[in-house]
Structures are given as C-alpha cells and as structure tokens.
Length: 222
Image 1 (cartoon, rainbow, N blue to C red):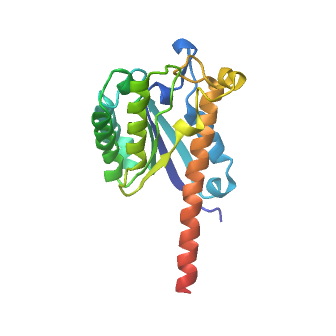
Image 2 (image 1 turned 30 degrees about the horizontal axis):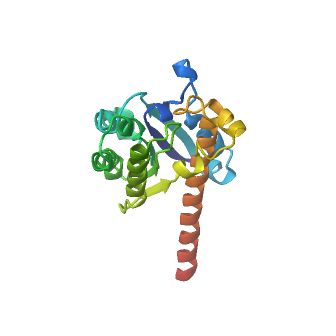
C-alpha cells in the first residue's frame, strides 16, 4: 500500500527580491522556483511530503507599506484556511531603508507581519537584507542595525538566513558580480537561483536537526 504523503506548504513573501525582478522588470525569476526544485529532489523530504510553494512578492512594496495587509489577505484566503502554510520565508526591508525609514519602524513592521503566520502555527525563516551597489555610510549603518535586530529575534519558531553575508556585492569578484547581480539592487536569474538554493539548504538543515533531536528523544524513552 502506497504511503500517503503529508502536505508541506511554503509561502515566499516579500518585495521585488521575492518576485524575482530582473532585466529592469522585463522578466521575473523568483527564487521559489529553485527552492521548489531543490526540495523536491531531496529524497528524504520528497518521500514524506507533497511540497507546494506560493510566491507573494510585490515590487516596490515596503514592509512598512502594504506588507501587513497583504499577509492578512493571504491568511484570509479559503485555501490558506483549509491548508495553512508550514513555513513562511520572508525577505523585506530594502525599499524601506531606501526611503529612509528607521530601523526600529522597519523591524517592528517585520514582527507585526510575521506574527500572523506564527499565530497560525507556521514557522518563519527571515532573511537578512542584502547590500547593494550604493555605498553610503548612513544606509550601511541602518542596514547593519536592521540585520542585527533580525538576528536577535527571539520569538519561538523564527529562524534566520544571513543573505547579507551569503550574497555580497562589494566583496564579490567582478565576474561573479556580473553573473549574480543585475542592476546593483536586484539579482539575475542565476542570482535568484542561488538564493533558492540557500533557502533550501537552510530549511533542510533545520528539518534534519529537528528529526535528529526527535530520534534522540525516542531512544532516550526506549
């Protein structure tokens, strides 16, 4: 008799970097495409779960803008009510920083938006905000402060992926930068694919660690 697989639903939520904006908006290649591919080729996951990913990215949007309303709408949807998300992958803050919003205001909004999936028993993976081609001391300082606040988030079921460290701009070689970065703010298709791979690796790492802990607890009970 075939094993009935569990549903494993992920929401990738954010702005243009989640939507996959590239080529000045002439094409979109969201990182969720590679994320889904990587997770479905993971034998441990694919043997247990039917994996599905929704992508909700809006170019130009701010965390302090309509992120909260969009997340509320997403959780008001009948499908979400019937099949809630297991994970929400969150990336936002670039536009807020660009428009001069304070780090306190941005991080407060991040927490308000992600509190919604947490209240529905989803787990949340928040990515730090990547750098860009602009090298402005005040912008860099506010980004660093925001990313530290993301790292310091102590809420249950919140995890972090340091996209800032893993997708640098200024420390990359010129050849790699040309391959990964599109316009100094957005990524190329190859860049978004790399993000999808990083997210997949982080999720698998978390899930495997939890499985190992459960196995250890079971052995202790035996």
